[in-house]
Length: 271
Length: 330
Image (cartoon, rainbow over all chains, first blue to last red; front, side):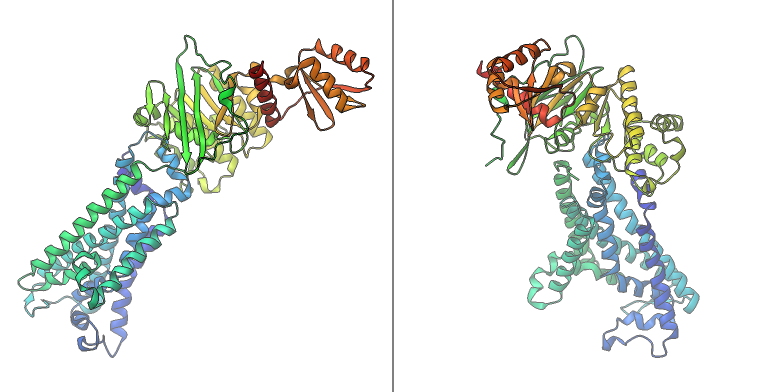
């Protein structure tokens, strides 16, 4: 049995896996139902609401974007932190890490398999979110030609294609959070500590990105690029901020995963 | 500063009573194996050799460094200096090859509680090659869990997890089985069953490295043993040679103070010690009449002479140390 298959089977046997996915399935329906029942509609853009949320009731495709916008800074990083932190620290806490490492396995390969499956968990979650959002949006408001943020309209098929690309981008953003949590996971024997450490760092970055005095840090914080997916909905697509974001994510992912690998290879397993 | 025990320096006494495997293959050996944790030396220059077919007892009180040694043997921790070797494979450099020949557990064996015992064995066993369903059934039967193989391990008692740990250890018929306190948490029948299983492994030619703090257990199942204390091996060798109290008697007299002096004159300082109200004399049976004669000659009333039947591990350790120190002075 390969490491990947074994790690995937393990997450399928954990209840928290399904709680996370269930949350991602439900939230688009809650947003849609709330919008349907609300007489006032969402807050208009000049009162703090994103422009496309205002368009949900006219086109169900926007439910997918509203769901992504709502979750990319909170629930998705939380699930990514949980997923990444369980890789090493969660198993150390349960005592199963030593059982696994007493078998003839390469530590580096095992860590990479765990990192990969933690990302697969998030990828499946995003697919559930996307399918659920499209189903809910289509059921309540129907699909229509999609108006881009730059004002042009595109076909339903083109719109769904852009939404898929935006979700793929969000997946890469969450892969940085997974990598951060995996790194913390190699430093502690407590899954909760690793989750907390990763989440606190994400929140600290979000706070730093919220004040102009820290603008000089913004290009380096991965959280500053979480919303760069909106640039796919311009015509023509604004590739520069997307490219910067992808480079930022890549540097963080490679850097953090390398650190985790170096730590785990020489770690004394005392749990 | 290292916190190294200094009241007994085992380097001053001969540590190896018997450590050669002769023509037999050395399955497990450690070579000046040392492990430091910050300012604590948990394992100190450990030299062990376990021969093929041995059921090797690794004795020591809690905190002696037994579990740390086993973690080093499995490559879970890295040595500060020295190394362990399994067959021809030195750890940690050739950890993977070495672990293909070892099964076992350290501390409490832990499994995935939300999976059945069979799934755990299948999943973990296949990390070291193919495992058939028949083999899973076989090892579950060997440890008496065949009727609970489809239960989730989360519902298992501590003793059942111990048994499952042994089942996983045996699943690939390894050359070496390393068991850390395998009878802890078992009921008397369970302890008896596990000991019988270990003896059976020995009869089949499997080498077993058994960590325990129970002298009685080691005597029952092991042919060779090492005694460890504060990270160091005090002695190692055949179990029959290790136990100094095989010929010991307890003496109760009317004046224990004077009696102690008289007996020390007869058997030396290391040959007699105080044990609560008794004096314990170490020596052959022929020594007893002579000891009684000396005491009576010195007008000391001899109230009782009884065999020293059972000895705790700590007592045995202290006695062995005293004996070795006596030899060293001689």
